[in-house]
Length: 161
Image (cartoon, rainbow, N blue to C red):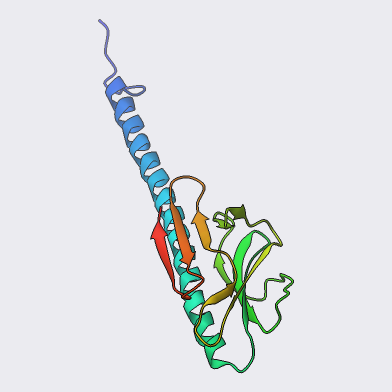
């Protein structure tokens, strides 16, 4: 007479399917979370540029000297800095507002490492006298925001594209 061993060796097909389904759900959740974080970085960078434009206008209108805002890419990251000089050499001295995952384009020209976009305003009415008409911020996939600069009035705003 043969005695059957009651202990199992291995997994049943149903157990394997359940484990694979759980792993697929976790992987999908991680991918979704990553995309949400990238989208938040893109939106944050666009609104940081808009906020810095407001700060720049306040600084410039309240100063006796002409002040320039410099938006630049340095070591892959996006920075903003304010100086009294129109020419600017990127050195990472300003405030970092975006990381290397974010693509920034000024009037359809993508900012490469070392490139600088300089913005200036008129003191009497706050109109932009130097700078792009639009600054596009994207994550390369789906999320894209545009900061519009209205030259004649000095107004600026962010729009999702």
